[in-house]
Length: 399
Length: 118
Image 1 (spheres, rainbow over the protein chains, first blue to last red):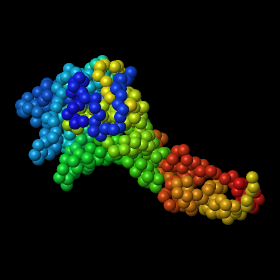
Image 2: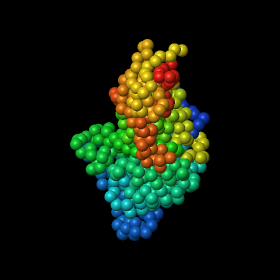
Image 3: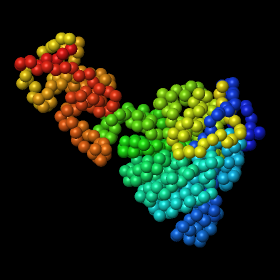
Image 4: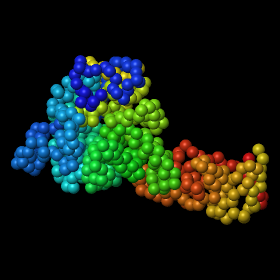
């Protein structure tokens, strides 16, 4: 099923299985008695609207330079621009965006999703900036806008506030400011282009604040060309290469950093979520670290057990974009073998071009995992106090 | 249970160890300070000759050290010569895996004789 079919109204939805799952039937309609939580949905900030929430010099600058859309773009990243110029017909759909809370609720209802955690659509690349003042100001602006225009926890709309890696102390204060705000479910740590990587001790104030607030931190991957490791993807000609590697590489680089600097030991109640990078990279990193750890334990002297023990204790991963081996049992065995069934979070990344849909995830994974993946694990990872069944649509799953 | 004489008092100085064969078992006998310890000379990882490895201390960081690395267990940690897995000799505890602890053989000093109980 083409991603563009995601979030069409339910009555238009075909119940025929997606090509990958053909022959894997029979299909059942999943009519859960628990709410379905989508842990990664992107809003699209209207630049003029966002500017209303800016203060000080940033507001003045935005009012002086009224550029539609573009002022929010980061060099190397623009969600409304194709990854690479298409040659011939571009098979992808037109970019879709979601601009209002009402529009969001309507499409969630139509897709059988009861609650969503929303992330920025335009500001995923702020960590790549060299200066601190702009990313701090834009994070504060975004957080005010998010709370005022989007969050509606009683309607199942939660959000992640964002912080600036460039100023950890200001970011810690920002987390403290929103610690008790209803609907704030997580702290988004912009991961693409971040330097140094998120394991560096300079970020400890951010982790301390997030742990104290009971909020997970979310590292959101995306494909991004940048001179900073691991984003130097210039040698690849194709979007296929860049997309296949860029997102998991961003997650791998940051998790290896976090796991080898003691973040997990120093902040044992901190939860860390990796988003939009698929799943199969995580068992690889866990097993690779464990393998090298034996003789290099003295370099990570804060561990008294193998790194995967700590990763499994504190790290979560979202499903999108879930891998599809021909033999689905291989995927199941990988996740199960790494002990990650309790750490897997359903996500769509809607409405981005490579969004997953609930049906697809439900068909790729065992039905017996559905309660955990669609609901329980999200409750364990995020602050989601008012969950209830809201959507009328159901999703189809493997029988 | 049987007792086997494996060394004489004075044979090992503090910080020295010797590998002994008792029946089918290969055992490392350590003298640390004035105490004797005996561990299997087999690493649980890949069966390397564990007790023949370097004897030293270990770097540890925890809340007590403010998460700064500290040198601890000086002279009490043996690292397997094959892959470096570290064990605290007096307790048999593996430093890399909290659930892994080596069997410790009972050591008796009687008169001039040092005996291992199997």
